[in-house]
Image 1 (cartoon, rainbow, N blue to C red):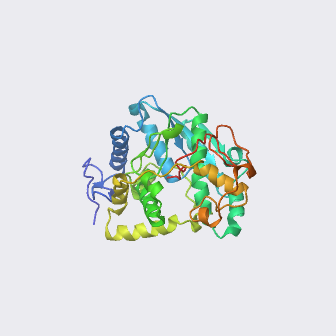
Image 2 (tube, rainbow, N blue to C red):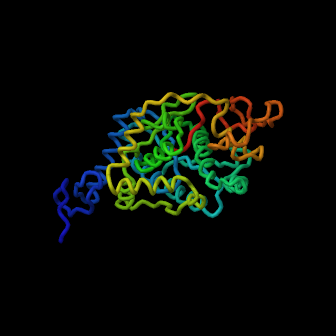
Image 3 (cartoon, helix red, strand yellow):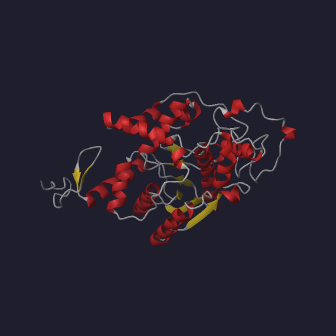
Length: 348
């Protein structure tokens, strides 16, 4: 049976049927519609004001690649300038290939690229070193917790380095729905309270950040990359198979089989949650995690590990090396720009 005509241009044959609306579109019309929806998300949410210098978190993967490409197309209409900021987590056999994809994108699109490394920002710690440190703790899945928190801090520092006024990341609707599920399953009211909306306004001295692709499904992100023939890195991180997110992803797929709108329903539910704000901490989460690593107690700031490992030692017995800008109290391993409170955050 021949493919139907595109319901938008009525000239070309349809190449897909949109998962959400069922609309039959050719590749060109789908990409135009996708870009228009991202533009609407940015403008309706007032996410990027004219004149903004935008740091795009670039990992080389499909989401950040699509985000950078779409924002490059929309930049003249939005009146913003773009900078690519990539983070080298120090994952042997994985990150080098991903960064190579980012460098190709930067050269092709003529966008400035800055790479910041965990090793430079966090006193020599890389993700491979973190993995070795946590291997004997019975918490191999903790690698993704460390990486998400530290990557968020590293992206903030990279954005400041390039003079950015705003940060954007490529999290899509599926990513955000998985995060909502994980936070519910862990009973993490603090992250649930912070997880609604399309981003954060930059409280506590942090730069405002947003997620322009948050209402786009993963399927449509992949389709956009396909029709635009984008070059991106598609291998899974070597530490990802142990992550708790994989269980949330499997659960989300089961929910979507019964209710196709499940991902967006979860995203919108998070926006409407009314929760009391979490108590402020003396340290941001990045500093707390690094403090545990330096003291040989990597579980100290992770979930139940905060209770299992006993109370922290008195302040006078702790090591006090801090990187410039850390204003959090009583910690051993500060990160640049830490001002305590709020528990830091995880990407997303």
